Length: 154
Image 1: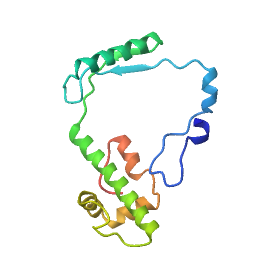
Image 2: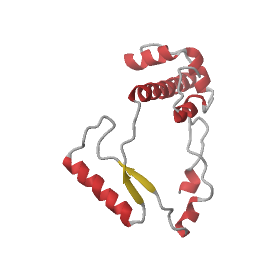
Image 3: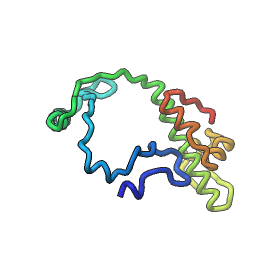
């Protein structure tokens, strides 16, 4: 199934990298040994509910029993940068989806088409961005998101 459905489809704003071979061939290969980071608290330092912690520990033990390396980790996350990057990606996807919709309807958008918050994002993002994203200019925003270098310029 994955071999038939994986990969870029026209109109996708982004896609996963193409696999090195066929997914079906993986059935005959032993899985690679993974190094898994285990977090027992969220990015703000808050511990999850005790039942969630038990599930985390159970999943870690299962992964270890399958031959994977599980190490506790506490990665530093820049929440200010993350918020900006996430907002930029969401705005680009919103603008793209709306632009494609109005293109399909063959008319100009108006604020009665959608809820106020979505309209505000659409207007703040700007017509030039919306047009580039609708044309399928892939990689601009989403590629920079991976590098942590998001800006509001496409």
